[in-house]
Amino acid sequence: MTALATRQADFMASLLDDERALPPDWTARHAAGLEIYRNNYRSALVEALRATFERTERLVGDESFARAAAHHLITCPPSGWTLDLAGQGFAETCEELFANDPEVAELAWLEWSMHLAFVARDAEPLGTEQFLEQASAFGEEDWAKLRLAFMPGIAVRDLRHDLKALWSSLAEAAEEGEVTLLAEPATCIVWREGERPVFINVSTAEGRALSEMMSGATYGETCEELLASEGEQAVELAGSMLRRWLHEGLVERLDQ
Amino acid sequence: MTSIDHFAGFGLGLRRTHYADFLEGEVPVDFVEVISENYMVEGGKPLRLLEEVRAKHPVILHGVSMSVGSAQGLDEDYLSRLRSLADRIDPLWVSDHLCWTRTSAHNSHDLLPLPLTGEALGVVCDNVERAQDALGRPMLLENPSSYLTFPEDEMAEWEFLSTMAQRTGCYLLLDVNNVYVSAQNHGFSASEYIAGLPLDRVRQIHLAGHIPATEKRPITIDTHDREVCDAVWALYAETIAQTGPVATMIERDDGIPPIAELLEELDRARVIARQASQARAA
Ligand SMILES: [Fe+2]
Image: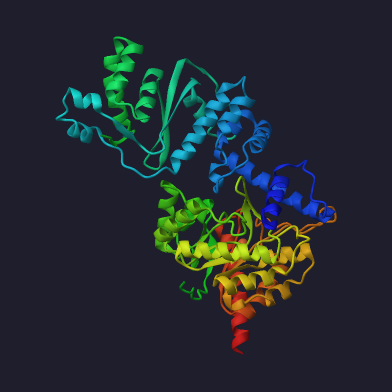
């Protein structure tokens, strides 16, 4: 390593680790200067996390959030060029730190997904009409082979809690978060509608089907999976979910 | 590499709380400076808003993450995204800081100080040349404020900046507040620093506020969160008297007040610059 590279590696290590011994040629003035950089580093990142995870902070309170953010910076120090991605992995950090309150990680995941969807690539969803037009001549085999490309920024996760209620109860700073278990687990879908990130809940069976098709499975393969897991209801679900995805604007185009 | 013409207006940084002022009203500024990284995204609302602002004002792209001081060189993905943004926005110019922000493993997202050595100067010049090639235009580099200097330093910061500008053909963004803060912290003369720069390369000036040192904390901290202090105004007057008219802006990053307050500060800069011009003419 060159002298500069060594200096920078050392400086970075000292920035990230409060306990690290300083270079032998450094004086008390250097230590005081470094302390300012440490503070700047930490506060910029904690600020970035607070801005992205506004509702998560309201749910757990300032102090718990600050502790979680500090923990996150130690376990996942940022590596990318944009501060916008400092929250990468924060939902997983919450899962570990708030293991007894799984709604915290669910909410953090939702805020993170909406944050990503907000600046995802611009795209026009495929309307139901356009889809029907393109599929008008489909034979059975075409339906089986159908693959879909979904809107940029779409994200999917299973949830135990009613995030819709939690989300709106935390809209204002002083509110108490309303934590309720869903009657049964659901799958949350996040995407961007125009310029606004939005989310809906669907059944976990539909959520699984969507995840499969997002990873490239054909409609035929997905329907077979549904048949195996849902039995008789599969046929109806296969139709209604496709209609919903088109109606909500989740599909960008046919991908064949 | 083409040159950058003088553009002697008065501007403000675009901050989220002022979007409505810029989009719905007429803000009396000659240019708007934006943080490049906030718009180096794939799509969505921020880019649409920036394009609307661009339709009304000339825009400067001011970056914080290029890290021209990194021994590892520049991030090619970063450069190509910045190039796309510049192509899309057609800015007055693109700027970043004389500092480093990352190693190959980590990013501090802070403007970290460089040892002022011949070796670091070589690295910075290579990186600036690479960036200017990738962007297809010369850049402006800004002097950061700093809180420590290195035992291995071989030259003053103004000498470093002068040689960098001379070797790479880049221009300077002179943050007068940063000069003041570093002068306080390292005990050099702010006037000597400014007089030591190639002032014909200065294309833009930043003015900002800081927290003065105290007995308990003997370090002046560059916070950009309050109004410009009198000592910095005086240094601006001294600077603009030597440079002649240069694009000047108030840079507020935190504690953002209503836009009217920033416009008042900008008016003070206008008055000082006008007096300097009149004095030069006389
Ligand atoms: Fe600045």
